[in-house]
Image (cartoon, rainbow, N blue to C red; front, side):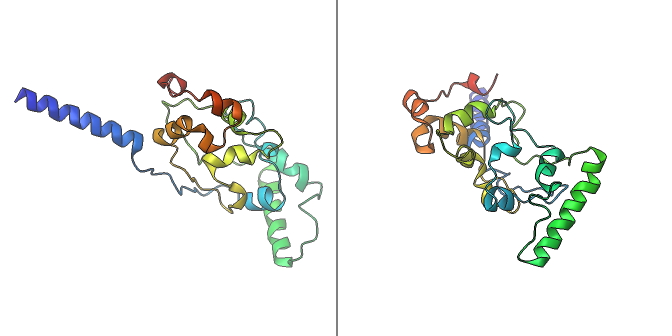
Length: 201
């Protein structure tokens, strides 16, 4: 009886751990409603604004950084993008309405939208953008090439949604096969660590 109980507990613990590590991702496709209708496809896609213009701390910080309204208004308050003529008048009116909303609800009140996080790691995981971007960003390449493996190509998304599971299996597979993921030669040659202390400290 005790032996059967021990075996059952061990099997359940093993299955539970396997589920946590490699279970299906609940968050793929997660695209929460945001307080403001920001469109990455227009900004990063059509206008080719580099990721670092808005996410300015991504190369040297743990977090990518969420821009304040002042970053938006660098272009939109000066008329660089916000008040130029549009080929399609309905597009122009829609954009003017959004810029008015941004200006009236946030800029004039010295506030920024309270964005809802899309890509969220569990509390027991310590993730920093800086070393990942350093390992993935090749000299002369657009920043988005370092972002795509985890975030997908947001320059093609009207609304950003989570594209990858970002579970432990996803991360470990990338660390084990860095050449498949486009790591720069230095990291692909020397390998990327997979010991527990890299992410759980």
